Length: 91
Image (tube, rainbow, N blue to C red; front, top):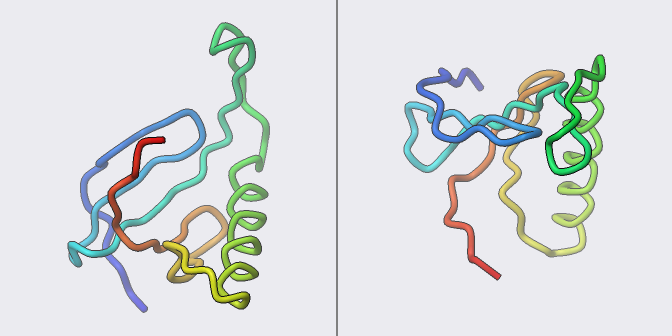
């Protein structure tokens, strides 16, 4: 599947979400940034984003196999995953 990455919608400490041409889908990009002590100490851990992407996708796929729906669609590459756009429910 060829998906075009459009504008940045959100950036947090660990990932960036990008819009796509399909309004129901987003690209989730995992960063190498790391922080500690509420953001006071910051740095980069090489390939942290790659590992986080792989681990997250393993968990999403496991949950899907057990009948628990997730926002996972497919892993696009080492750092990016195609996900369903959703509204976060505040808890």
